[in-house]
Image (tube, rainbow, N blue to C red; front, side, top):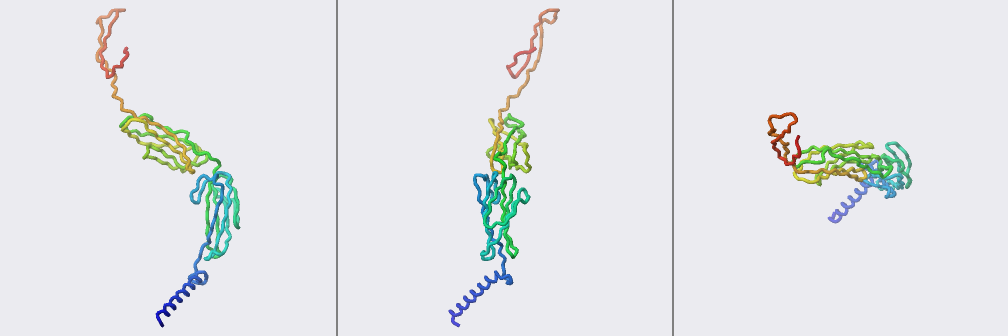
Length: 284
């Protein structure tokens, strides 16, 4: 056989082998058979003015939120088969609705809380694809508010070490508070995450201060909610020079004249004292 003839036969062999391998992928009886999960596509349409924040598969919105949900699913390795899509709706973990989506549906989310939308599509072979969307519906737009932020000290001396306690109270009527940030300086922050929610959130922070210069120190508290809204409040600390040491006046001697005193006689007293201050105004 010529060199050209061998090359032709080899190429044809590869071609037929490739076709056989491709076809056997779709034959359930073939050891080359491969399972392809459904291809599921879900699109949500809504009024963007109602939505405050979006993070991947989670977003926050205000009630009521109207949603148009369009979904499609293709099955088979060639993606040429339309598949049914099961739609499930949960509110705070409890099932609210269940339906089959033909093309699109319209829903309205009114109740505040955590809404979970699930979309499922499955092949006859048992393979399944699922998509989830979590939506937090908020009852109103009121953000957490700081109502009190105080410090145990307000005047500090240069060169002295102080352990200052900051006391905080925040009103969080919608359980939206995410964290408290204490801004000590441009390079020093203390952040506390909020894990347990209540109407009144109270917190304390103990912080060590040692200042070597005089002036004002502004400490800022920031209350940040899950929508990244910030409410802040400041406290002001004053750092002053060390006052000179104070020594009270000391009386060293008292004399009087005359030495022998009669009844109703005038007596002159003379007091000798030492003092670091010239501000003594009287004695008795």
